[in-house]
Length: 335
Image 1 (cartoon, helix red, strand yellow):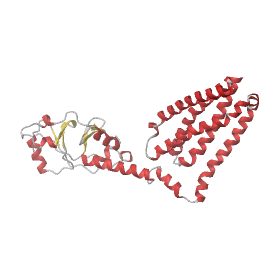
Image 2: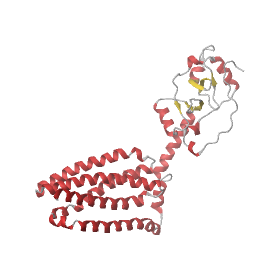
Image 3: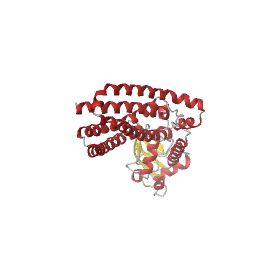
Image 4: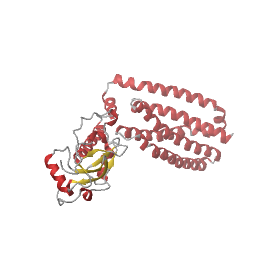
């Protein structure tokens, strides 16, 4: 046995748990060269000749079971025989834990121009390396998955393909229940408006802008729904979209409310009504984005195609909330 060489005993076959799929744990190579700091380059080369490893892109330099560096094979092979591996190693090697998502591993390696990525457990014990060819496999798999999603063959996009090709009977079956919910919402909205009949009678101008308030909130919500459903279909997590989309709804609502306030004030000269319309539009638009975000996510979590349910359901919820906001603000401002 070569002095200072860390023997890698025959390792059993690894069995992955479902949580380990698509993570660093799935791609780690455990049968790799390992050496102590004091091992010479000549000893490493001698060992490489007599042992077939799963990957020889880098030599893991260990202190016991703990990784202290990686010596790239490009530096080991031409080095003088007496050169110590500890002097040839990268003392700050790229490291990930087994639970890191495979896409993040590939992104990290590409971003920082690294070859092999070391994998260590929670106690920093060295587990193995993810070599270049494994990183290429990850990138190819992720690339093919993204293309398949966009084409409608994987993930939630498969539902979109099914919805596009199903029969008329199934189309009616999938859509009618959600439209029935919309019908119930319409009746509820009519009853709600009747409760504020006196306010609307005394301030007829408010009735002129009822359709506008409802339409603008629906339009903003529809835009948010389209973005969220599109993002979910290609695997973008909702947490990466929610903050920007909600903030966008608030900003758009603020701008529209100012525009409507000025238009009503100049066109009709009724300041209180203009204030009611402006405040209502701001509140309704801000809430519409949140509703449009929440519903597709909830439906997706319950394996219900958001394309069928989120539109009708979000519309009726947004309409009722918009009307309620508009009428309550009218009562508060106008007395």
